Amino acid sequence: MNRRNLLGLMAPRFQAQTAPKRDLLLMEAPLRSVFELIFKGFGQSNYFLDNAVVGLATVTLRGQSFERTLGVVCQLVPQLLEWKQEEGITSIRAAPVKPEPSEDIMAVFQRARFPVIEGIPCRVAGCVLGGAAPVAILESGNPLRSEVQIVEQGQKIKLQGGRYLVEKIHEDGVVLRGEDKVLKIPLAPLVPKSQKPKL
Image 1 (tube, helix red, strand yellow):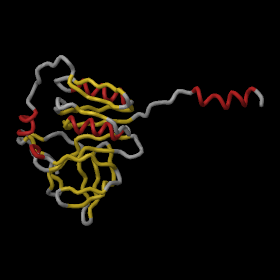
Image 2 (spheres, helix red, strand yellow; image 1 turned 60 degrees about the horizontal axis):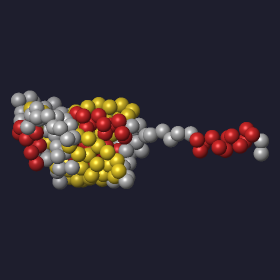
Image 3 (cartoon, helix red, strand yellow; image 1 turned 180 degrees about the vertical axis):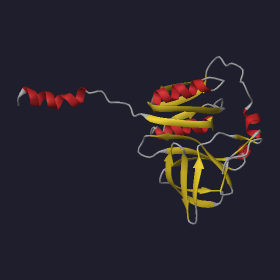
Image 4 (tube, helix red, strand yellow; image 1 turned 90 degrees about the horizontal axis):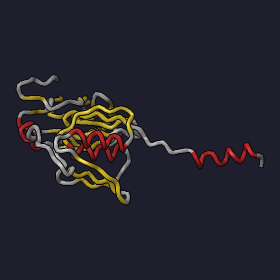
């Protein structure tokens, strides 16, 4: 075997593996669901979320790694969170020093409502794009008691009593196909009651 062939066989062994990159879009998304979305979107299944993980997050990240995405989201909320990986488990906890929260989460939900799509109050609170199967946070119902689902493109789901196929997840929201109708649910923030939602 000549030297060129030998180097060609050895090269893959020494090449660094590149971490997968994903896009993350959040609009006042519930924080616990955000982390579940990130873990699912990056194919991570071993994680722990502390009970102190509460709040809402809004951010757009493009082409970021799993580690960078977690780091940014942990810095978004008033109570500041930290994450670490030990023995293959990623844990998210409140950082040791916590500043005072700027606004009560319940107050935000009490002033809010979801856009109404085909008679169904619902919204997409966030999504992870760029993987084999995009995933999204789908919320429906009353914001104080909303039903929150992490949905994957191609998955069959129930929404407000109806059955739908998650046909497409993209930057603007989610397209659901039912037996008799198609729902285009927007990636949208919580809408204050004083504002009329766009239909």
